[in-house]
Amino acid sequence: MKKGFIISIMLLSFQLCAFAQHKISIKRSCGFSKEDPPAEGYAWGADNQALEYIKRICQVSGISKNFTVERSSATATACALIDFNNNRIIYYNQHFFASLGDETYKIAILAHEIAHHLNNNLFTKDSNRAIDELDADKFAGSVICKLGLKLEDAKGLYLTQCPAQSTGLYPAQSDRIDAFSIGFNDAGCQNTITPKLATKSAETGDFCFQNADRVGYKATVTILKEGKNGAIKTISVSDGEKQCVYELEAGVYTVNISWSDRWSNNIPSTTQQIRVRSGVAGTLALQH
Ligand SMILES: [Zn+2]
Image (cartoon, rainbow, N blue to C red; front, side, top):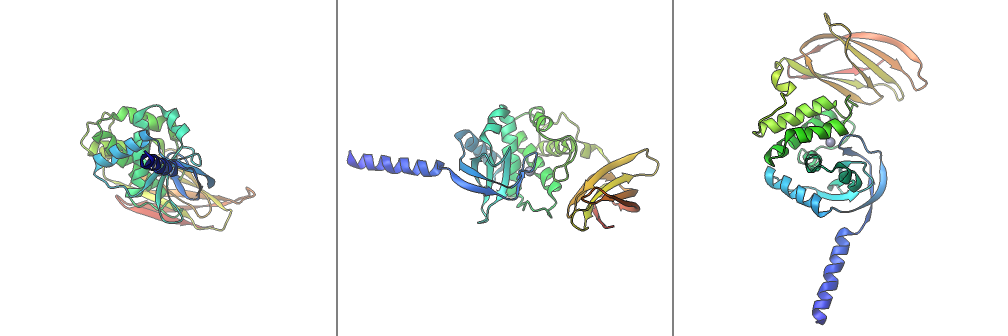
């Protein structure tokens, strides 16, 4: 009786430890649809439902876990990060998850965050974050297919949670849905959406703009193509940042580069030509 009592206390202590809150600090992470600002907060054990989802994702994709999963209010959605001891962690906000309702949404988000760890993403400013996001979406699409869930259900997640326009670190909503659809398709599922990448000719390439200038100078890049009316795309690149435009038709483009400093003084713009090569990512260093 006494022995049983001691074992019960030991088990209870273990459970308390497993679910005990502990202080955390998020510096650099990859939120699902928006960047979490650096924050301090608390984290504690994942709930059974999330653990079950993680188990199903790992089983169906044949991967072994190289991360831990915890709840935390320090993230607004869910994020993947590497802590100071180089541990790979996924935090999710339980209120955000509860608000999602749809099981497919939660599985797709967790699969996306798991992909960041599988792909050994580093979440640094220099790493090509937009491409990391698309790779993670593609993996999430494959998981949704393998679990027998519906593409249309998962698509709703992107339509409701992700910004329509690219935010630099995060690609545009349509690009993310395409990446997700391709992952879904490649995993052997019938796709009701025709992915843009699959129907386009292979004659496309990506082009990145690196703001190599002094602190405080923001570049606005307008991309124009001969024979086409208006700008193909206009992007803002803050100091030290790199922004990419994806799947541009191969060819020569004219880019207008204008600058503004932190006091919003405009500096005369310059014009340059860039060549987009099929299947190759080009980069232009921006300097004034
Ligand atoms: Zn991500």
